[in-house]
Image (cartoon, protein in one colour):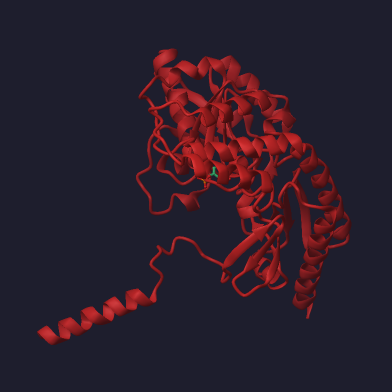
Length: 411
Ligand SMILES: Cc1ncc(COP(=O)(O)O)c(C=O)c1O
C-alpha cells in the first residue's frame, strides 16, 4: 500500500472509531437517557417522565434522591471523602454496628459491589476451613439458575452458562446442582466441600423463591456436615422482600450472607456479613479493598439504615408487596398469557407464555420502566416507598400493555 493510502486508511479507521461510543458494547442499552430522579419518578433528556418499577435493578430502594440520605452524604462530602482502611473510620464502624443490630450477623466487611461481597464470602469460607478448622476444604456448591456476579469466581459460582461464555478456563472449586434436589446435593458433598451458597429467591434466574422445607433441610445438613451456609442477599436484602434480609422468612441464620444494591441507596457499596466464629478467619492483611466503606460510602449506609428504621421500610415493603401481588392477581386472573405471579415483598416476577422483551419496550413507550428475569418473566422492583396510587398506575399500564400485545397476536 502506498504511503498516502495508508495514511487515508488510518484516518478513516480513526473517524469510524470516533463515530462509535467510547464505551465497550457490553450492555444492550435502551435508547433512553435518564437525567433526573425523584421518588418513584425519572425524567429523560427530552423531558419525558417515567414511573420507575425497576429501581436501578433493586438499588434505589428508598426512591430516587431520598432526602435524609442525600443530606447526610452531602454533609460528609464537605468533611472528608476518602481515607485508607489503614486508619480507623468511625463512619464505617457505625455502619457495621447498625447492620449487626438489624441482622443476625456479628461482623461486617465492606466492599464495592455484590460480586465483590460474594467473592469475599467465598474467600472467607476457604480461609475459615484452611486456617481456623484446618480441614483444607475449599469447594463451594451452588445451584442451577442462580446468579452471583461477574468476577471469575462469582461467574463460576453462577448456575447459568450464558455468563461463562468465552471466559474459559474457569477457576476450580465450584460445583452446581439442581435447586431442590436434596439427593444431588448430598451426592455433590465431598471431603473438599467448604460451603453451600444460594439465593433465597433466585432473582435474575426468573424470580423463583426457594422452598422453605428445602432451606431448612439444607441448613441442618450444613450443620451436620460442618459446611458453611452462605446466602447471597445482594438483590433480596435491605428490606426488598418485606424483611431486612430474605433468610428471615425461612427462620434460619446463615453463617455468612452478602448485601449490596439497596444498602447505600445508590452509592456503590457491598457488604459481607458473618457470625462471630468467622471473625478471626480474616486476619490483618488477609483481605482488603481500597475504597470499601470509605467515609462517604459509610455515611450513605448509615443514613439508609436510619431511614429504614425510622420509616419502618421492611414492613412497608411487606404491605405494599401484598397490595401489588393482589392487584396483579386480580388484573390477570382471566389472562392466559400470564402463567404465574411469584416473589415476595416488592420483588415480583410475572411469568408469561412468551418472551417479554417487546413488552419492556412497550412499557417504555407508555412511560413505565420494568425489567425481565430470564426470557419470559417480567420483573417488578419498585422502590420500597412506592405508593398505592403508583402501584395502581403500574398495574393498569401493564394490563393495557399485555392486552394490546395478546390482541395483536390474535389478529
Ligand atoms: C443475587 C445477586 N448476586 C450478585 C449480584 C452481583 O452484584 P453486582 O452487580 O453489584 O456485582 C447480583 C446482581 O444483580 C445479584 O442479583
